[in-house]
Amino acid sequence: MTISIQRIGALIWLLIYGGLFAAGIGFALQRAGQSYGWGVVVCGAVAIVAGCVLVWIRSRMAAP
Image (tube, rainbow, N blue to C red; front, side, top):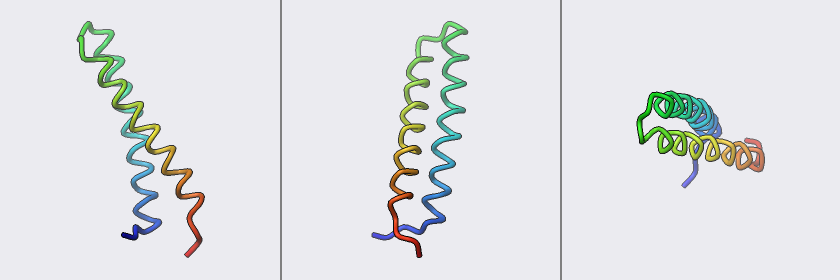
C-alpha cells in the first residue's frame, strides 16, 4: 500500500491541529467540572503524538 506525500502531509496537519483543539476542549471541560475532560485531553495528546510520528516517518521517505 502506497500513500502519497501530499496525503501524509494533510494527515499530519489534521492530527496535530485536531489534537491541539481536542486538548483545549478537554481542558475547558475539566475546568467546568466534567469528569470526562481528562479523557478528551488524553485523546488529543495521542493525536498530537501520532502527528509527530508521521512527521518523522515523512522525513525518512524518499523524495519522489
